[in-house]
Image (tube, rainbow, N blue to C red):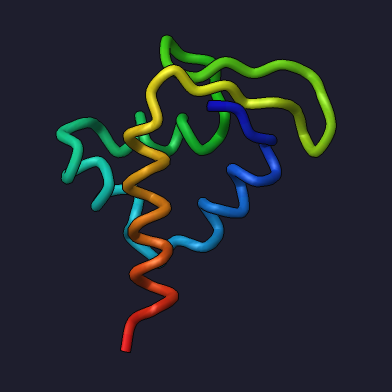
Length: 79
């Protein structure tokens, strides 16, 4: 999956406080791994390249993004 860094940042900014650690706990990974993902830091699963809107982010694994999008949607639609 590909997106721009600005769009990735918008997802991060839409998450409620404490979501990084909650996502990490749900996926069984470290909170720092989740934070690095949203910083677009190059890892085995995230690749960055120069481009518009802060650059292009290419994900090999979208698990963190999928959980983040679900949490953002739940927060936006909470009663």
